Length: 477
Ligand code: 5AD
Ligand code: SF4
Image (cartoon, rainbow, N blue to C red; front, side, top):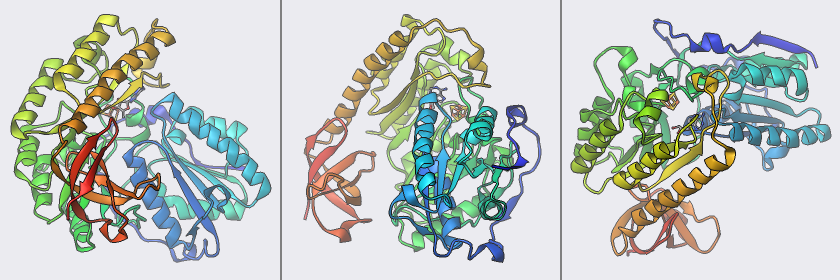
């Protein structure tokens, strides 16, 4: 297959942080692309973080504006896009596996267009690998140019070539792009893009580029429109939401944004991800003062050892982290706290790992995403020597998870006998006559009901059983 290389990724360029204003562009589809998809189907597969989920909603929105319809069977769609994640090796392995399956499907339907988007193409090695050995992939684009999707698809159809456009320098802030949201009652709302933290293990600052905040007016307008449409809950998204506004240099901070969003009338506000270093008192005050800001915080700690935190370039100490936890618990009584933890950072000692276990005990997390450190090419940590065996890393993960899972259970047990408010998402997956949704503290709750009218409403549920991963209760009349 012929290749059209419009732009190729460069980790070196992606590392640069230039001081320049990021323009906001208001999306408009060119007329010539509008009918391109009529009579055809599409599927977007999403991997990784909520940022990718939100991006996939934009890709689906754009494809529908082009006339494509959702495929019944995603594996046989006319256009299949994989929106990929590069955060850990195992995330990438899964995606190569799906691509293998799609190769077979394309043999049955040679007109199928297969696209790979998101964070993996931003890595030089991935895009080169695709160019060299993945002939059945038609489209390769990254995180900065999803609005070019119509143009890229058009070129792929016209030229029958593999079209590659991966920008390393971030582009504009895209406003008003069409979105096909998964739910009608809860929505992702991006408040910023990119990350400037450069934690030494992490590929995200390279794949997602420089930190750039949306204008507060655009965010408020989006949320006001969601309220008018009947949305109950928003989750504000950014790699480090607590740094919101720093790049705009107006003095307006994330805490200010929470107060303003509370006044829009949206019932529930959540946000992710927070960086402990930038979580400030105003944000904690907003969590205390604003009824719509939910009493749950995901605050990734990564490690309970100061030396490891320093090597990770996290820019806070265990003591500083604990002080913020103290303030949070004092300001928002009953707050539910969750976190991210990495085990097996290069040459982490048993004592250092023990300090992580101690910290989990002291904070009493009610949930955590736990990971074995994964070496990412191009990051500073990838150059560190590492003598911990794989077996040791797995053992540590196992020991940590035992503790974390006990925290999940405790976090559910504390609601036994209480009446909680559940925003109903839908029917439980196992089809046992139950419906489910989340409480303010982000506890997944199942209850007996079969009424589709409840979806998107807040109902009262009395908790009767606490399991590790969810609670069960009875609907109050
Ligand atoms: N290896 C393991 N976990 C990682 N994370 C980020 N990069 C890596 C890596 N190289 C984890 C961090 C982060 C979460 C989103 O993913 O815990 O908070
Ligand atoms: Fe990665 Fe650190 Fe940025 Fe989070 S804050 S995305 S872990 S570099």
